Amino acid sequence: MPVKRDRVSEGIYVFTSGMYAEVTATVIFTDEGVLLVDTLPFPQETRFIRDFIEQRRAKVIYVVNTHSHGDHVYGTYLFPDAEVIAHYRCRRLMERYTERKLSDARQQTPQLADVKIRLPELLFNEVMTLRIGGRTIELAHSPGHSPDLITVHVVEDRLLIASDTVMPVPYIVGGDLDDMVTSLATIKSKNLENLVQGHGEILLRGEIEETLDANIHYLLTIDRLVREYIARGVPRNGVLDITVEEAGLSRIPLGGLVQRLHHDNLLTLYDAYRTEMRVRRAA
Ligand SMILES: [Zn+2]
Image (cartoon, rainbow, N blue to C red; front, side, top):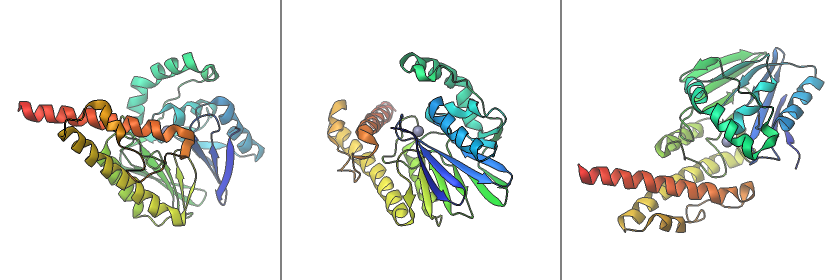
């Protein structure tokens, strides 16, 4: 499947990977240049985005890395003249882990051979506002999926690029469930026309609130059920009996990946709560 391109607003295009988990990248054209949010993992798809921008005689001036995961940052090196923006923790995580993760990934995936790590240099903590070519772009910390995640709000277009805070199933491995619930609730307070998920379909106005509510409900449900299973003495693999549907979501999106992400969530919660209970018992 080739990379897919959708126009979501005047001069704003979303590219969705056909090679990796429907991960998205968003191109925002302005009179002063292009802002690119995330970069896809595979250079052959990122080059498709670069060519699209060059054909319009435009230049990328900023690349936003929404968080340090490879599927969002690997393509950054193809825009060497752009300034790279991220949360300060994203840079810290990349300094520590990304080079090693990339060399591991290369063993399985030769298409990553050309990728070079480019570290973000324009860093912030809570919020950062950019004014470019008449557009107001608000970047905000949105932890939960990962501690360094940021969302990008294109204010005049009522568009939120939510990165992995919003995907067909919330994924909290390496992140934090409570933070994720707070971050999802924060998005609910914005009056949006479109929402770009980190993975999967673009959400339209009528679907946004319902999706955010369903994701919050999913997290609170698995949180409660895993605790109940542990209290009943169910062994570790027993929590995998909790289905995605029981927690209110569908396993159909992302070509089967939802089920795997859901199982990872359950086992991560099981391990965290078992440790918590052991600590409590020992105290
Ligand atoms: Zn991702």
